[in-house]
Image (cartoon, rainbow, N blue to C red; front, side, top):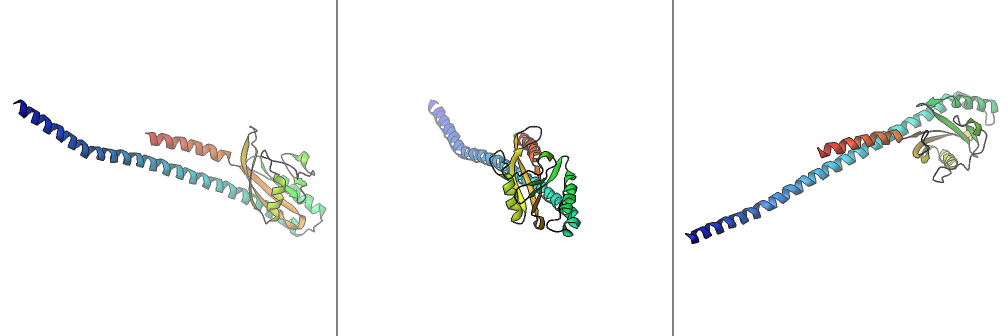
Length: 212
């Protein structure tokens, strides 16, 4: 009887071991698959959010480009009918650009190729001054870069600048165009801080969904 019980226990123990040998790999595979799926979902979410952020920023950049092009189009009748040294025409064009606003307090700025400011609505006391040596918080000579971008045919330029109300340095995206006959560069800029704030909220919501 004792021998029979021992055999039964041995057989049961062997079955348990065999069962464990079969089930353990399956369990491990299941755990790995679940972890991989969670990782893949998290990765896909991060990639989707990053892509969404880029799309939003590109939308802001396209908008500021359109604003600058609208500004140069608005003064085109003055520019096209003026000479290179027509002071009166330049003053009329500058006044038109000075009055333009978009997205609240954003504005158009104008510099001559030597760095002299022509239009700077948020700091009118600087108009007429040479700001060639104006630096961003990271030491970049932004007016020099504005001029370089304009003389190269125009385009986007990104730089850090103090964000109104916080005085914190935030990325700013400007679009620069040129009026070659007058030796002017015309530009405008926008912050993307609101995009980053919106994306932070989306990331928090996505992280909460992944945890649930």
